Length: 430
Image 1 (spheres, helix red, strand yellow):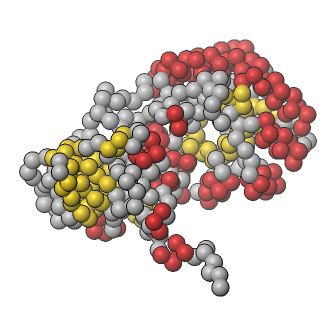
Image 2 (cartoon, rainbow, N blue to C red; image 1 turned 90 degrees about the vertical axis):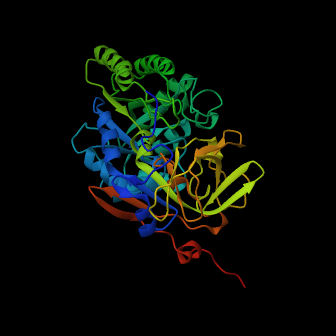
Image 3 (cartoon, one colour; image 1 turned 30 degrees about the horizontal axis):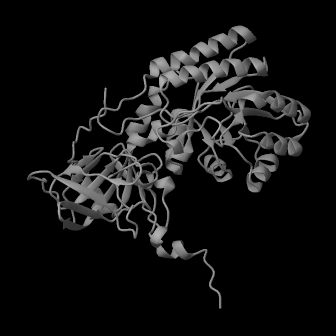
C-alpha cells in the first residue's frame, strides 16, 4: 500500500500540537519528532533477535535514550557516536556473558582518535570494513581475545541512489568477499575471534536483491565456521516518501533471513543471533521540519514560496533529489482556503540549488500547495532521518532546535544554536 499522507497538502497539527503553536513557541526553522511513531516502528521489528539502531540517522541523545528504553541496541560509525551512546546509557560490555554487544563500531577505517579510544579506553565491539582495520586493532589488542565482526561486500549492491549503494566493486564499503580467507588468517595471527558477519548493500533493499545477499551470507558464514555467533542483515529498510511507494514486506524480509539462521544453526549446532540495523526506518516518519514563508514571488509562470529553512537544515533534496511530502499551515491559525497552485519551495541560501522541490540531477519541480502568504508555515515531512544530523552552518546559519513530542508534552531536546556558539572555536589573528 502506498504512502498517502492523511493531512494532504494542509497540515494543522502534529501529534496533537497545532503547527502554528509549535512555530510560535520554538521559532522557525524547527525540527519536531513524534515519539509515538518511533515506538511503533521499533515494535514492527519484534521478530528479529536484535534491533540495533543506526544512530547516524538521528543521533540526538534523547532519541537514543528513547530507543534504549524500548530495547534497541546501537550502531556507531565514529568515536563521537560511541561517546554519544555511552552518554545515552549504553555500555561497552554485554549485560550477560555471550550476549549481544550494546554498542558496535562500524566503519571502513579507524581514525587515530577512534583507534586510541576503542583499543585503550572503551572496548566496544568493532565491525571491520577493511583488512587494515583488523591489522590496526590487532596490533593494539593482540592476545586479549577480543571479538570482531566483519562487514563483507558480497560483490553487488543496491540503493535508491548511486550515492547510497554500499555494495559492488565501486563501493568503498566492506571487505571484498574474496578476501575473507586472508581476513581470517590475519585475525588468527592477532588472537582476534570473528564472531559476527555483517552485510549491507544499500538503502532501499528489495526482496530480489535480498535473496542474493542471503545466499552470499550463507556461503561466507560457512567459511568462517562454528565460532560465528551473530549475523547482521544491515539496514536500508525503506519508508515510503512519495505517493505510490510502499513499505518492505517485513514478514517476508524476516523469513528470508530466518532461513539463513536455520541453515547455519543446523550446520554449526548452536544458536545464531539475527540482527537488523535500521536507522531511517525507526525515525524518518517521526520527524517534521517546520519553516516559515518569508517571501512570495511570481516570475512568469512560476510561483515561489521562499522559506527560512534551506539545505543547511535539510540536505537530502540537494544531495539525492529526495522527495519529501510538503504541507502548509496558516501562521495565524486560520484555515488555508482557496484554490491550490503549483509552487516551488526554496530556501534563503545563496545557491540556485537551495530548492526543496527538486528531483535527482537538480531539476526543479513543483507541488500543488494552498495559496499562502508571508508568515504562513511549510511543513516538510518524513525528515526524522538524515535531517538534523546532516545540517551545517553554511552561510553562517544557526543550527535549528529539535523538539520531542511525547505524551502530550513538547520538550526541547536540542536548543537553537547561538551566534556565540557558532564562532566560539574561531581564533582571531592580528
